[in-house]
Length: 378
Image (cartoon, rainbow, N blue to C red; front, side, top):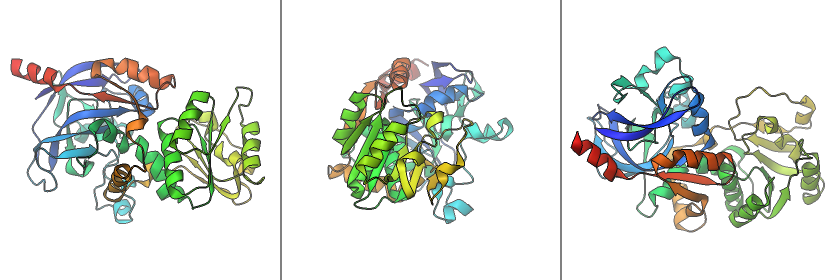
């Protein structure tokens, strides 16, 4: 079956091209993607050394299932999850499915080991990787059944697709990683897609003070709508956040916040949350920063804890139903997170607006009529 997909070339560029997706093999599921979220990792994937189908946030409908698939059937609405648990390895048995030892994303594997993630998907007759074993920036994708979670009817595809990374990372880091306590104080550095979901999680957890920190006033106004109780606008003359840290202390009885979260994707700010917390507080870096950075070890003194949690310690069977129920009750915003929607051919615009800080979350919507016409013609 043919469909359109965004293909990264491994050296900084990409193009929308036609790929061929086979019927599912045993334990595989063919999913028609209806909506795919965009995040900074998708832009980073342009440099992952080999061609691959972009995208790791997605929602859609099951089109076909392979032998042995027991959890889903054609027509089911599904959310895709990029940290795919096997259920049997040490980490999965230890209740850490997001750290599954079997299903590391293809881009972190050696080329000789990545062939297993190319099966069933070809570009001009050559097998091609799927980003995070998903490749959601395509009209069709072929995944293991463990990559899917049921999607309730009351959640629009455009709102659901962003749960599989940005929402889960922010919300889960509050609930599962930091375990923010009721009545506590929380500082959030960076209020894009992930930061806004930290703010939402802190509000739902019952934090009494939620301090949003960002450069742009418009971002801070948005943060208030998602639950920030206080805001601090950072000037370019405060690169080390010294004045911002002093403002946080003034708001927290002179001590500093109980918890501070970094969600900027700026390497120089990887350890900045340590400046914002009190003695004995918890600092979390959520951006997945891989660049080499240095830190003054005195920043860790007085029993400060520093964490870099992966994907909010996601457990799909527990966390996704919880998020959807909070959405149904009106306690967690999803629709409001989506700044704009685009077609797959407008992906350059969507990526640029994200990089420019003009969108919280951008979503690609797929028009499958174009794909069907292509398939009928072939």
